[in-house]
Image 1 (cartoon, helix red, strand yellow):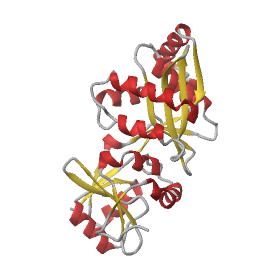
Image 2 (cartoon, one colour):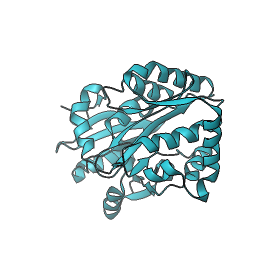
Image 3 (tube, rainbow, N blue to C red):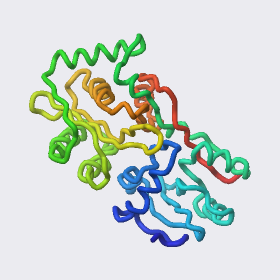
Image 4 (cartoon, helix red, strand yellow):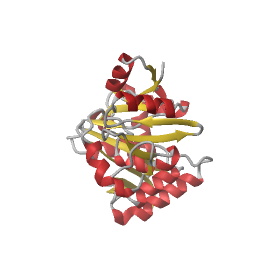
Length: 285
C-alpha cells in the first residue's frame, strides 16, 4: 500500500509485486517504464512513490535542482494533476498520448529529444546487411579473426565474471556514469528478472549485455552493455552477437536514449535506427 499524496515513500524491492504487473500492462514501449529501471536508477533521480486519492500512482523525483513527477499508469483527476504541477513544476517521460491529452488541457509540451529511445529491428542488427553496415562488418571480422572467443548466457554463476568486466570498464573511464546501477543490476539480476549474455576472449571475461523484455511490444530492452578496452571490434561484435541469439519473437531492440551526449548519439545513429520512442516534458502554460 502506498501513502496518499503529499506523503511519499522510498522505492524498495518490496514494491515490485505491486508495480511490476502494472508496468507489464503498458504498451508505449518507454524504457524507463519497467520496475528494474526505476529501481536501479532510484538514487540517480531520487525516486519516491505516492498515490492520489483516486489511486493513481505517482513517481516523484529530482534531477539536480529540478523536481519532477512521472505518471506511467495514467493521469489523475484534474485537481490532483494541478497540485502536482504546482508542487513539482514539470512532468517527465510523458508518452505521445499523454502529451496530446495535456496539450489539449492547455499545458505546454516540450519534446525531450535527449531522452528518445532508439529502436532497431532485431533482424537488421543480427545481419548487418548492406552498404550502411560495411564498416561495422569489417570491425566484427577483425575481432573474430584476432581472438578466440566464446559467448554464454549471463546466468547467476557468471555474475562474478560480469562484475570483473564492469570494474575493468570503470577503471578505464574518468566518470562513473551508470556504474552503480549496472553493478546492482548484476547483483540483483535474479530478483529483477534481468538476463543477457557474457563474452570471453580465451579465459578472460571481456564484455556483457544485460536487459529485459518490454511487455506487449515484442521488444527487448538493453539496459547495460559493457566491454573492456583493447579489443578492436568488440562492441560491434557483442551488439550483433546478442541480437542474433535473441528469439525471433522480439521484432525490435530498444537501446535506450543518448542523453544528449554527442558521441553516444553518433554511435546510436550509426546503427540506423528504424524509429524512436518519443518522450515529452510537460510544464504549465
